[in-house]
Length: 315
Image (cartoon, rainbow, N blue to C red; front, side, top):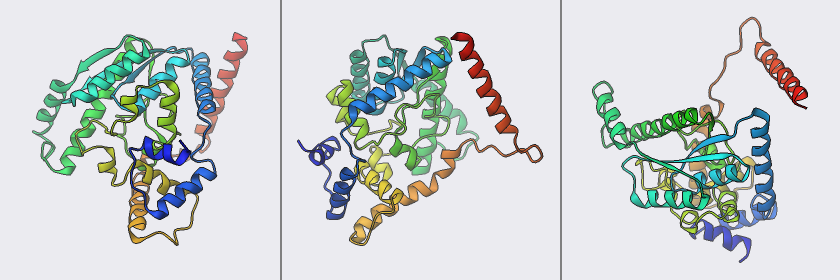
């Protein structure tokens, strides 16, 4: 199978327009859609090994959703020698997602825990509805607000498990989600993000194949499990493959002269997603000290000095 056919297969065979097809061919040619998966895996695993050894942290809790991102993240940590605690956290969950989560944990070969957070979630929504207007409404905005509660409740749970094992929490977001702002502040962001530089439409699924993630997970329809829409791509407004092509088109300022009005409308969806979520990618936004303007730099310098000193003592 050539690269283009494989890309389409890993994205559940979407129908691309002539412009999206030719742009994909260009991105394959310049190496955005590359065949360096082994190198990718080796370097990410090495970075996780270095982080573990540098900070002396060996344990990590990972939320397992039954999706490809959490499966790849957990596998990378395990191969880097971390003690991985997978946590399946159901909130009115589709049973098929839970089953895929268990399949991932069994493939990992480590002990995992399951926590049904439905009752806790429903208590939160019921209690908040007394003081927060329309949080329990069936509108799109109401669904998003409740989805944020779900995500933050899961992260609260993961951090408590991390505290129990004297470890940290894994982030499972990818580069496509990062650019789209398709994540919940303080709900999806943990301590270490192994795949946040990787594209959802190619690098994540290729890496999943390389790491032995179950096929049922690799080819599953992407969903955040938050009950907001009928899958990730429905909520994004475009399939992940078109989003990534549009993203790199904008990042590289590629020619749009031959794009149809329908193509341009999809590019605009991507543009608006990126434009409206920039504040998330610089959170928290730290204001500079009005008088001592180099205070942050001084703290960073001290951090580096102390870390270097600690390394010298260890050596």
